[in-house]
Image 1 (cartoon, rainbow, N blue to C red):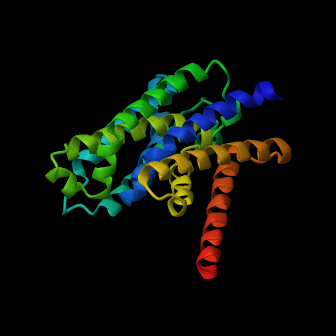
Image 2: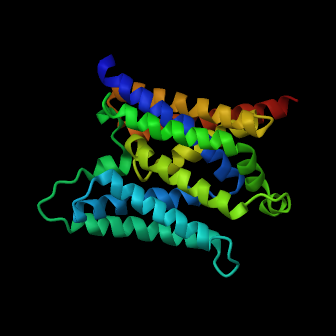
Image 3: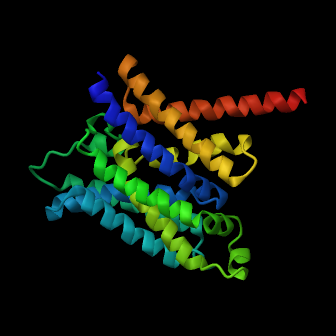
Amino acid sequence: MWELLWPAWLGGSLVALVAAPLGCLLVWRRLAYFGDSLSHATLLGVGLSIWLHVPVWGGIVTVCVLLALLLASVLGRPQLPSDALLSLLSASTLSAGLVVISQQQGVRVDLLSFLFGDLLSLNSQDLPLLMMVLIGVLAVLAFCWRDFVLTAIDEDLAAVEGLPVLRLRVLLLLLLALVITVAMKVVGSLLITALLVIPSLVARPLASNPHGMALLAAFTGMVAVSGGLASSFYWDTPVGPSIVLVAALLFIFVQLATVIKLRMA
C-alpha cells in the first residue's frame, strides 16, 4: 500500500507547496481566471501532442507558455476587459482541445485522467523531474517574492518604485504555466484552479501578512492532498476531486470559525 501511495503523496504535496504562493498572488490581484485559462489550455496541448506525435508534456508546456506570453502582452489594455478575455480563452482552448482529441482516430486517450487527474499513477521514476521543476519554480518565487507581492498589491505603485512590472507579469505567468503543467497530474485540467485558489482563501483570514498567508496556504494544500489520498484509499473516491473537496471543507470550516469568533467578540 505505502509503495503505491508515497510517490503520489510526495508529488501532490510538492505541487500544493509550490501552487500556494502562486495562488496567493492570483487572489491578491483578483485574477483567478489566469489559472483557469492556462489550465484549460493544457487539454489543447494534449490534443496537439497526439496529433503531432510529440511527447504529451512537451506539448502541454509549449501551449501553456505561448498562451502565458499572449496573456501577458494583451492584458491590461483598456479596450480588452481582462475578465472577459480570460473567459473567452478559457472556454475556447478547452473546446479546441476536446475537438482535436476527438479527431484522433485509433488513438486511445484516457480523457478523465487529463480532466480530473491521475495522481495514483505517479511513480518514483517520475519524482526526480517533478521535484526539479517545482524546486526551480519555488526558488524563483522566493528570490522575487517581494517584487511579486508589491506588483500584485498595486502595479502603479510598483512601477513608481522602479519595478519592471511587465517583466514580472510575464515571469509570473511562465511560472504559473509550469506549475499548471505538473499539477495536471494531480487534479486534472478542470480542477487545477481550485488547487491554486482555495488554499489561499483558507489562509487569508488566518494570516496577518503575505508571508504567513503563503505558508498557511501551502500547509492547507498539503493537508488537502493527504485527505484526498486517504479518501481515495478508504472509500475508493477519485483522488483529484477528493483533494478539491477536502480543501473546500477546510474553507467552509475556517469561514464558520471566523463568523463564530466575530459574534463572540
